[in-house]
Image 1 (tube, rainbow, N blue to C red):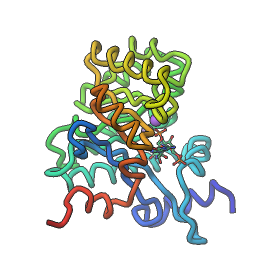
Image 2: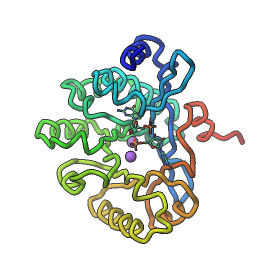
Image 3: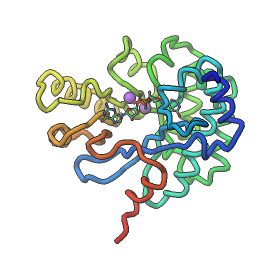
Length: 255
Ligand code: G
Ligand code: G
Ligand code: MN
Ligand code: NA
């Protein structure tokens, strides 16, 4: 059974069960409170193995199956945003280059928002990677502006690792920079990383953008980011991605 037919089967079946969407908290280091979450899809195989997205997103991209897969993740993200509307600020969803280049991506997104019952579209964030924007075409930029016009926010994922980060900042109407974990993990013991982070924080602030530092794996990094007044962090130190039910428990702990 090929990776493609496995994915096709999953999409034809019970998507919610077979392609569960997990959530990783995004936290304010100043308060320790959960401000948002990144939605990260998983896949159960018929052999009962749970696959991380690295094992099937590339196939999904190549075959175009990332389009129905992406719709499923978006639908689940919106459903959970509604479920957690009183406890959670926002949910951030990864959008692949292939999805973004679908001609009816924006109208579909608008329809999904309309039926979601979401009070404020800025509570949905779309994460875009630099590879999606390599072309930097006018068409793509128009599309990003159309997404912004819906009130949805845009985050630059894996920021700092591509070739054109500063070009991006200039040309993409982004709201959030997600600083790649290669700049974050170990920053407390690395003055070069710490300098890069303060420069990015300053730059983002000047451009009216927020920052999420990814890959915070220990207390020292958390403390350093709090001292640097980084608005938000994400990483194994606080929590790995967890099931929706486990995330629900983190949001509404039993008193
Ligand atoms: O295997 P691992 O968990 O490290 O893979 C994470 C990668 O998979 C990240 O790059 C993340 O952006 C991507 N990813 C996770 N969920 C989704 C999704 O719903 N859609 C897309 N396009 N990518 C996703
Ligand atoms: O490319 P993207 O930023 O969307 O990838 C998110 C991926 O990063 C997820 O697969 C998630 O499991 C992983 N991740 C989240 N926190 C940490 C962390 O603290 N350390 C490492 N190494 N990976 C992390
Ligand atoms: Mn991401
Ligand atoms: Na990232």
